[in-house]
Length: 198
Image (cartoon, rainbow, N blue to C red; front, top):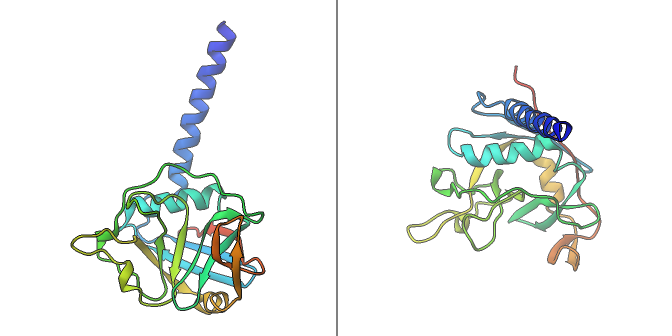
């Protein structure tokens, strides 16, 4: 019994330590963290805005630091609209997600060309791991007096040409993903990395 209690105490202490390290790894004092995203079409960098969307940025960075986004696909590509990813593995299986987060779409950031935003379901507070890049000025995704919008939390800093190549790929219906705008050949997010602070 004593061994069991000791093991439980060790596990609790280890879990608490791991959680503390994870929080520190999110660069909590960096208001504009940057993430490098390496794909089979090239590399681009996004800058996140923690001043306007702190909940969303922290949520996104947890998935980045955990490696959840590595070797996932961009599963929804619509030219002039969005390039969406963060939800499915190379085999089309859903990634493991955390609890949904609060919608921060009223933060003043707009769904303009080159911005990154969180995907969600009809429930405004249902965003988990999926994100998308706006490939146009999508005013209809912004909040209004009667409706929640889609939370923008950053912008492309370099490599926009990579996304412009991706948005032009041919797409088709995919029953695994359950969407009609899935690239016919996988567009892979090979690795997402939180860039070290200078």
